[in-house]
Length: 207
Image (tube, rainbow, N blue to C red; front, side):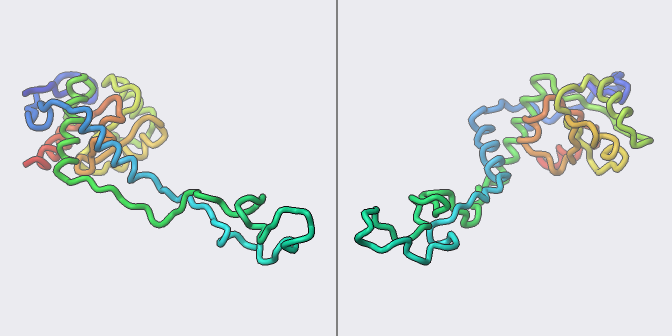
């Protein structure tokens, strides 16, 4: 299974051998949906918390006597029936439980996501990406040359300080290391620009 390798000018410079067990498998939508659901659930803070009548300050004194006023009986002005009272059946934060996804399933989901993007023609393989100056216009021009539009994910084998600084002002461009890549960020991106060293490092995760 081969793919075209380009340089930063968008010119073909050779061929790449792709692993069938990563880019050649058939994506299963229900499997990818399960991974995305778990991933998004773990990203939520889940800190919503309401106070019951026992936790709202005040309300220690009975508003009026039990009988003889002609009004409904009331024991506290912090009852849920009152304004500024406690909340009934509201969300209660007791520590957010983390949903677990087995590593093997997460790896399979990543392979399916990459295979799906590759089948759509949304992955561009380049020999290397180098930025001499940390200027945003250089990265914007580079991506335009490669035909990378929309939400773009640049996959590297190691951190690049200049590239990170040059791309941080581009709202639709993200940089990810091959060792940290997951199915969610792959599926969220419209176009992936993967360097040859990053592809090799990515393949090492299956070897």
